[in-house]
Length: 390
Ligand SMILES: NC(=O)CC[C@H](N)C(=O)O
Image 1: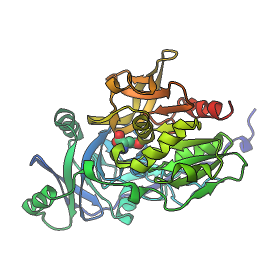
Image 2 (image 1 turned 90 degrees about the vertical axis):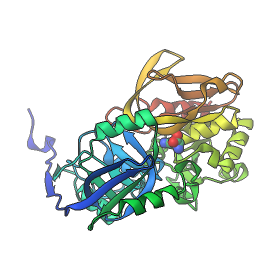
Image 3 (image 1 turned 135 degrees about the horizontal axis):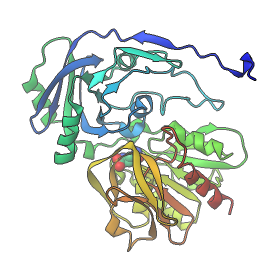
């Protein structure tokens, strides 16, 4: 028999999005112009336009530093209906509970329909309010299926997103778009990486996380292994990493081309050489790959979603993974490298994980820290723990 105290009382908060109807336009570098309704902040932004097929998780996606420099299209047709939680809610270590970093990282957001009402027990503001506060523009009323087909056919491209209270001058935006720095040549590390070390927990044994744009969930997973997490800047040298005397090292996810992180590649080379237990995640996997003689390349339209099937070649088990990447490790380059293939993508056979042939070094292209429902990829952190406690 239940007594009332068995139940947590949950209050559902409802808020209406009262955004004014603004002008909104998406302008692509191939000349295409799409009309929509502007929301969020009135401004013009330029970035690489990409799409994510996840049905939920916009709070996490918008704050994932790996999206820095990009205009994000969500293919799920109704967005914003559960609002946005309070950013100041933190866990016992002071790590934000519901956000992957302390700000919105995307340059702009593209949706089909923005929900006018948001309801959730955890809601503190609407998506429109949040984006307005953080000065990020959004556009709704876009046929995101057609847009996705365009990106799948033509590949990701540079675009401008304009939200304005007055009529938009398309020609002048097109000119600015032409002279905008291309996403591929941008250097994001100074923008996303911590400038100083940050320490979470007080355990004696520690894991250093090299911050090339780390998500909070990576820190949380390290903490759950029972280790102190030490977050350090992207360009921390091997000697400085080792000065913390860590049991292991995580190379985090992050935005941009892995070739733009030469200092991290250098540190990774020495971590491998000295057999320090190391796990690379997404950008971190690409960096580890380069450090161990694989090559990387740019995918046509990337993998961004929550249901990307990956096969563990050691036991033929398939995992449903979360992903967000536009570059990858070149499959043909693995054979002559220091790694063997660990995971492969069941959809397109791209590289999803590698293991060093001799040293304690593993890397996954997918996000083991992400949990869009299930937690089935957490075992990757357990693999790191096994290497650290060997
Ligand atoms: N999430 C990530 O770490 C992304 C890695 C890299 N920037 C890419 O786009 O492929």
